[in-house]
Image 1 (cartoon, rainbow, N blue to C red):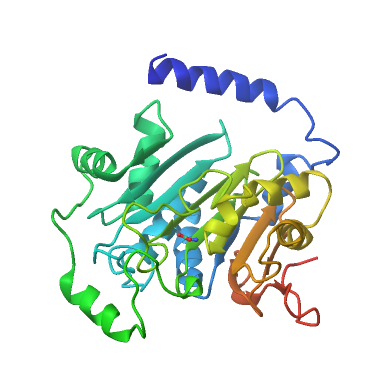
Image 2 (spheres, rainbow, N blue to C red; image 1 turned 120 degrees about the vertical axis):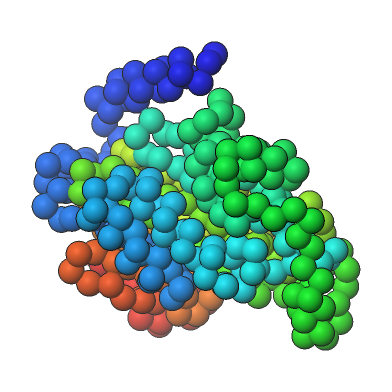
Length: 334
Ligand code: GLY
């Protein structure tokens, strides 16, 4: 099927799907949502400037997808220590990046994994979604594709200086085994626009000192990010191995479909994983979520997991519900 035919197909099937109700959730019409204005939620405190840029993009007439891309790009080029080319190198001293993007209308997705030398993997992910019939490109193919499509790339970008600096800080570097899993952060950014459409994306350099070729949860649809335009969206940060084995962002969205608030949906996904996983609550995972009604929330195994929330009325860093200490002040708006 050509990409055009495929897009037409998606358009028609989406229009048909939009006439159905979403499980047991009763959703307000888009006209009511428009009064609430856009909502932007992202992981960590460093997501706040990304949210604010995304809001500017929306207010300037850009789409939710444009806003996700621009917000994540800001973090990718901000010198962040675990997002973009300034991020954490693998055991061979090379930064390998993961990213994905999803658009609610049409249920479209694109991702890149283990890509080297691409300044903006989120843009590469969007191009995969929009210019190919595929969903995911990896490694050298993803680099080639980004270059062919005019994205800024650096060839042969092993950053020996950064790697040595990182290595010097390690107590016992164990090549191929990685170091502490909690030492990396991911930008995941979710948007509900004024028309009631949802988009999301994420980007990371992943686990520092990882085995070359290791791919985390961030480029996995339903792992690092999941968007369902009838229900809501979720994004993850933390140890990808503990997210991707459980399709955890998908779980969060399904929890919302069945009536849970965003905060409770995140918390229940973590509890469910902890019930199954030999590590129990020692998972190093955190989630953010938004729903179609403009509610938001977050939960994590990290105490006081910070996440950023922006609307036309306010922009602030909040604390997610902590699954490790029951008495932490909860985030969210419910
Ligand atoms: N959550 C990012 C990663 O584990 O790669």
